[in-house]
Figure 1 (cartoon, rainbow, N blue to C red):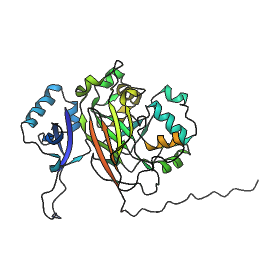
Figure 2: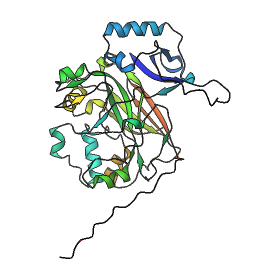
Figure 3: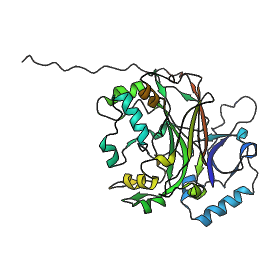
Figure 4: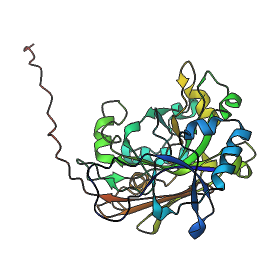
Length: 335
């Protein structure tokens, strides 16, 4: 089952200032290509709650939605499938760690600490964008980058869950682009902290959530989802990998995140960047900015087998941002 969040597009003609913004609705996605349609479910149904519902309940809601008239993509604007209550981004692809390490630390060796546990950082949930939204570039960067990732939407609260228990908390999967300002990120991480302003300006998730039962045939012998992942810039493929190359399964990621902590319904947990899924990895391996950083006007398209496609155009910002104040230096007494 594929479930999307959307807003209906405004009717033709000049907008009326008194008309409120269209509310977000939930829809069942059926068909593909020119035959793809979004069939709205009854009002008031939460996408996350629907993912958590018993299979019979979810199927009944889907059956009623399928009987209604469907909407084409031209009649809607796809919203982020969820507005996450929290977001965690893991680092699960060994080859990506090698490439990034070469560029940022000058050493391609994977640290022993990476193998010990699936590390993650928290992201900015209010920065999420829809599958086909324009993305405004970060104002202080000259090295704008993308990150191709697979993400899971959590539909049930869990704490201290085993991987087996964690499976029931995964409502479905979507494509993620973790946009990154690499020069800003590099400056921040020299202080021993995770990235902040290098990551908090945009994250794309979408185009919809695909429930786990739709992907059963893509699980490998170890139970890992094994899906082809590709990224293109302006129609040219610049990276490709498979989710089966993750060092940990999503069930293991949820389990680890829940150790002595709550993972809540509505959270989004991401795989981290796949191998060759970011420009910075190529920069690290080659020692030069090839391919070049993203520029205004570039279109980044990501596709994950069985899940879907997201496509965003980079646009210039129009906001006026305040200057960055330098720290007040402490006067020291002469020794």
